[in-house]
Length: 388
Image (cartoon, rainbow, N blue to C red; front, side, top):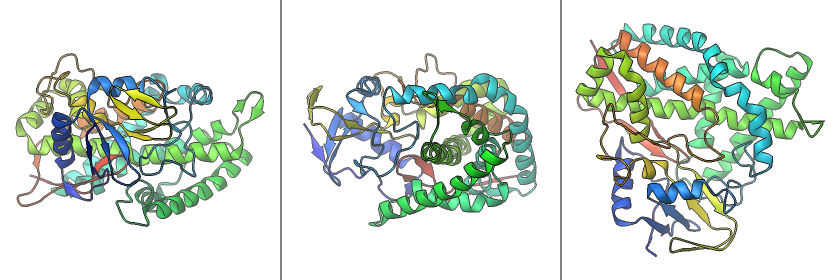
């Protein structure tokens, strides 16, 4: 089995560099073992990734970072295995169903339209800072009933938890930020018990499992996961989509001219630029297609490796608008498939519709270099755009 020193953090790179690097790794190694840190396995092919994600008994979600195999935290429901995971999914599913998302869509579009109209007159922006981080975050804050005025604090916590980079104090900073977030939510949970509102946290404090109220500790673990998912995933996915469109005038023109093409285009952009890099912990000694994995080993499963596999997707490294049979797994697969997928799709669709309605022609300024980061998710740090 091949071994190499692959750093999953890697530092700042030009936008798109991580996807190109993974494409090269897949061509040479269908799977390999990285000697970075304590060492971990990496899968590179669609079929292998699909098999691993569909086997939660062998590959546990108890640890979600290959660099932290024995975490001192538990994000609910992401870091739960069966049968506990099923109980929590059943509680949460109605809040993220297509019907629930459809009921929110009017307010989502209203907020998006206001932001785009405000930016349009400026003629330029940093898309990540000025739109991609603000838009989905306001949706999240409304869902949980949190004050928009505290956005700056929320984003600082998010950076420390999800974008720690490769500094030696990365894990202590992550843990410290998570303690601050859970401390904040402890106050919110206590307040909602006294004064319920029409929001997710007020609903969650009424839940029971096996006839007993959900402990506050579990509610805080849930809030922590929702906090991170709500503030980062759609931000990252939007940023890559608009980076592609800003640098591919033909695709951008088609989107602007044919709003009906946005749904298929959105799916193709999520396939080509899949951001999630899930990890799993091996529960038993197993020979996985020639990989002698031991109980306790960590496994990295970059979803872009599956979704850009040329054995499954012709011209896999290219965005092909109108691609047929686009069986991507940008939201994962199996029991841990992204619970917020319907909401994420709605936010992506509305953002692309409203932006291109008002700002159809935009580009990256000459000489500018958008940059990306890698950690639990891939994402852009910057995306300067300009338009007439």
